[in-house]
Image 1 (tube, one colour):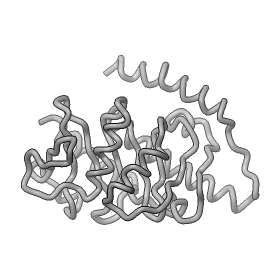
Image 2 (image 1 turned 45 degrees about the horizontal axis):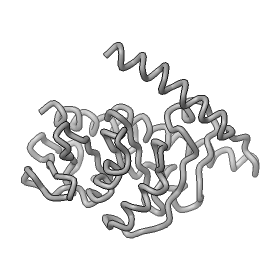
Image 3 (image 1 turned 180 degrees about the vertical axis):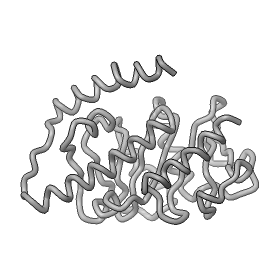
Amino acid sequence: MKESIQILQACEDVQESGLIFGTWGNLSVLLENGNILITPSGIPYDELREEDLVICDMNGNVVSGKQEPSSELKMHVEIYKARKDVKAIVHTHSLYASVASSALNMVPLLVEDAAMVLGGNIEVTSYEAPGTQELALEVVKHLGQKNAVIIANHGQVGVGPTLDDAILASVMCEKSSQLYIKALEITDSPRVLSDEDVKKLSNVYVSHYRRLRDFKE
């Protein structure tokens, strides 16, 4: 299955990008038949094999696979239900996003590349216990139509139409968190991009850069 190979490659990519620590975090893709291919619980990314991945339906039932699916399966299910444009999800516990998850209520966007990819300021959820339906719904609420959200006292989620897009959203979430935290060390009022400018930049990215990339592929 090509999606299995894509997830295994994506696991390598997030490790190399420094987004993952230990076995924490999870990745998934939405299959053409509406099922979810997701990483298992508790297996280090560098030890993952294709047979370790798990297929679940949209009710959270295991369709195939020998391992337990990620404990955050409910969150993946609810995001896919709420966002028909999302076909891939990356959840990580990256450093600066995790700092923001315990210190901030929002991460405003300071630079253009993040605005293009994320489509809006990164909201921080209220705290809910990991793996619960309450957490899943809280993530969906604060993600909205954007491509990243920070989970209070937990980590972050990046989404997109492909795994590459979801990883990029996660990278930009981490970068944005780092930039804003560093900026606050210099000034109490960092210069942030306006909602209007963020919307314009996001529209340019979706209508031009990403479309050009997809056309080349």
